[in-house]
Image (cartoon, rainbow, N blue to C red; front, side, top):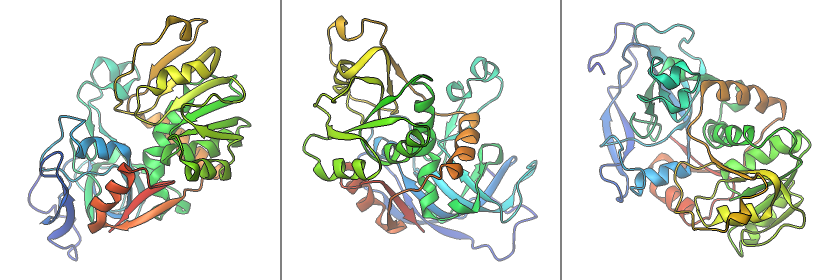
Length: 344
């Protein structure tokens, strides 16, 4: 990345910014004053409105995702406005409202990109993991991986759409077209967005939370779940499909047990604890277990077109940028119902 300002940079820009930095996994983030990043070819500099806190951020900070760029500015649920562009950027200009997601770059020429599966790109780079992200006042991003946003989401409430919403939507696309009863395991940021889409499309949603989490179950019912209970419970009706957002492998056989013949269990997280062995009978009768990896720009375009038509509204808990560690801990302890969002 260039280290000197590009010729079209506004003269009013600061030379430094505040950021929360991961210096080593399994340690708290550190508040640092760092140089203002400069956009390279194909990139834009953006000023943050907000950055959501995703469970993937926890996996990065806790060392469960093992190849982060270090030092790293985490964060990949970014709502921002373009400040200025590096060379070779078309379609974005200063003042444009954009969302920046987890998928930050793909090569365009590997076998997966050529097959329309850029989410599996062999040379992909990821915002807040291998590219500095949004726990900061500014960041840079590749323009082709920035999504235009409508003004409705030009606020902290728009941030969770950029991962919780996008990955939730991609998971949702794999459940099948004839699903009426949908189970969601782990009723957090992604689930509270996805239930709005599912209800908009006429589905019944059955919500599963940590055992004994009455507050979480009440929240799910307030969002329109027809039933909410413990993850270890059996729903009153067999499910047509289930989506797991909780990163708990032991939930896979439980979800299979609750899913009807021909149903699909989708694992929507980037990391999950080990799945225990289970009897073949749970998988038999053409049940399917599948994972979801990353997203494509097509997913993003579809979901961000759909969201304002639902319209998707988010329940958020905002934290100042400097309280990123406190926000991460609240998420780790299951104390966030909805989504946590950092505001610079």
